[in-house]
Length: 570
Image 1 (cartoon, helix red, strand yellow):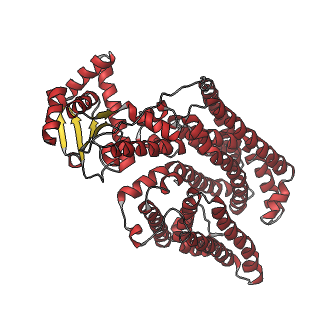
Image 2: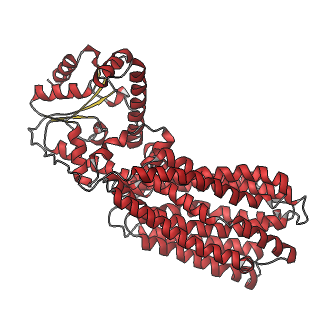
């Protein structure tokens, strides 16, 4: 989410904050309306339902501001003040840590005291983050910034797809495991509450270690993405080795501590009898035994996302969690309640093997020489005042040729591949990387792909190049959502070229030597990718005639199509 905020207007910021707040309101509505039924659905039992009720119904109240605080922290990091964001979160965490024992034991508030201490920490973190808005150097929030704009909110949400899937998988795993622990715990000597309590403690420890690994990968993500986009593959390989090296080191230390001194960590969260301690120690050793594999697998998935390999990153990011769910459902059938915990190392082994196979193949692909790549520099050509013509086109509609003909007739420059060269010069990324932004990806993959910092850099550089071209005067620009980028220009003429499928298939066969079947598939893939890219950039529908001054069937011929455009220009 970080990449979209800075430099794209306070409208994004306001809608991101508003969306987070409204999301919290929805959670409150569901939590209070569904009530204890929701708590029971996710594993609360008759013995702990009242405690869950007392805690949960207080926590719900802070949900809108807690979500806004997380959004503000992302905005603050994106503007280049990660220390401020971290400080705000640390203050809230420290208040929570100190407030819990004070409220529970000193003030004798019990579980409700723990909830009040939690929302106090969240509220203070929110206030600190909100105070930053007044000191920002690059934006100023005002009342109008919070005007709901669906297009902007959709773009922000698209960049959060990866994080959303990760968090959703954790929620699903927790709910399923809670239900299974209740089911199988009731049949065991441990009862229902001991397995549930142990699972909460183990998951807390699991998330602490996992978040350290994710932090390493997330911190390296923009550096990895940039170097991959610039085709500096040797650096990318070194960065991958560093990410895995430090992840392995941290996880080995944590594993040794957890496996050697499990009782110490269990007692940090309290101990309720010998039977509980015995079960918790056993299951901690089982569940966290291969957390090294878990962390390395997650780091590799984040690495793949950072270099834009969405088709591999999305499945790998969910692979371990999906396997864990499957094994959690199957293994306890044969082993009882402890089988729920054995599901984790079993899933870890299979997930790391599949991930290793993917990464070995990628490692070989990163051996392509990259140090001596020479990029020819493209110079902008000054032009006379006049109209700027942007041409969007369906694949096979001869858009490039029509653009060249219009430029020749007007005596101005036509920019097509030159645009990606200029964007490469602007960003330092490789032309091939920028040219591949319209990669063939489905909607979910594209959301994941667009969440990488390198792609965001490329998009930003491309938009800057388009504006620099337009600043030179009259010209023709083919593709790259130029009609949207230059939408504020008064002298803009937006053209969309389309043609019957049979005509376009024939053109593709002539240009690329495809068979008719290959040509049809190529058209479908290319048009879907262009449409998805345009939607991601603008929030609008590609090819919608309402967004263009001219919509021309280019089957009349490239020459005639160019004449129609020139005649419209007068």
